[in-house]
Length: 322
Picture (cartoon, helix red, strand yellow):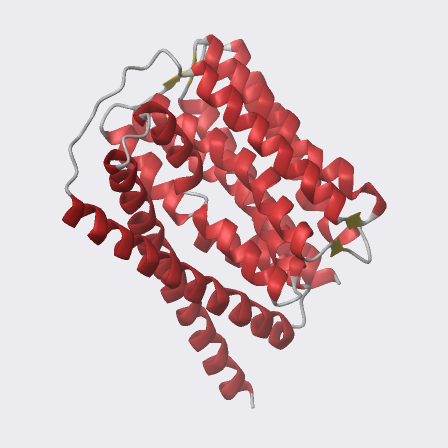
């Protein structure tokens, strides 16, 4: 019996990994296709580019949220959003800082974005104080996301536009690529949610915890890949901007979509208490680092990674004690 359970757990873990890789591939395909289509329809490139950057690496979280809401398991989306944001602000941010040997953080835009990120990341936690994230709460979170996009575009309005010619044939290929990418996103996110639910039942742990520890890591892979690539190319500012955008998207759009489809009801706040405390600690630490130094430096990156290690150990210890 134990052997069978171990084999099933291994199989589920393998399927989770495959589904996560498909999510990354499909997200890349959708974004690339949208970029081509925006050129074909002569949309303003700087506007489209920054909206795509804000959405691109968060598409897995968005589709997992939709799937979990449709499957009536919104706790997975909540755990995923919390876990992804903690992972982004600790492990991912720490890796970027170490890889780029410091990130400039004294510009007005960086400080402004960090402050907005902190406010929006805390917003769903306040709305959850009554143990329910209702459809009305979800609508408010989506409006917050639209406001974030508006401020993003206003900040970048000075960027010059470039026009790349795209033929009708290329546009048609991009349209087909977009459709197939969305289909893969839907399929992979559905598999991810179903497998997560089965793992939770097998291990006897809350769905939210599976979302925090396992699903969050899988859906955050695009952020890790994109931001490491940007850092290696010497564009650490872009990596930091994408990280901020991902945190805001998870806290507003992802949870907003989920609760509009299926309101998120949690029986007890204690399941998420440690995650909430770690998220608040991380947000405060990140805000202090951005405002007190000219750039995010090596020791701060190590400290952020240390917070993530502590977070994992805390979650596993609490689950063992339950």
